[in-house]
Amino acid sequence: MMLECVVTELDVSEPTLRKRLDKVSQKKYKMPLYVVPESVIYRAEPKVALAWREKDFPKSATRWVLR
Image 1 (cartoon, rainbow, N blue to C red):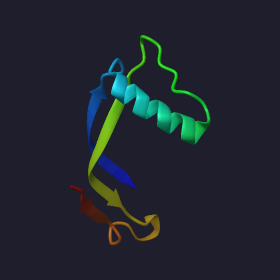
Image 2: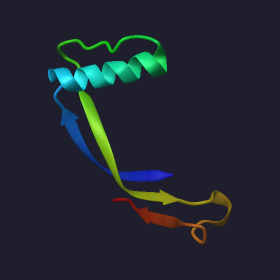
Image 3: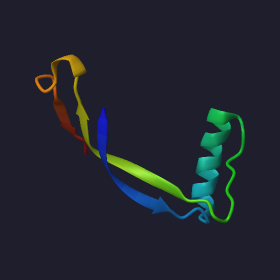
């Protein structure tokens, strides 16, 4: 599967964002979010998804437009 996305850089100094990401990190990885001054976090918002089966490509190719 391939995704076409719009990617934006998030402001890691934003307290509300860091709190949300820390909560997710605690739940998934059982550890706090570790942010150092040179940390960069991106948000990828999928716009188009492409998928296919290798054995019968291109007949199985499918494209979804996501909103």
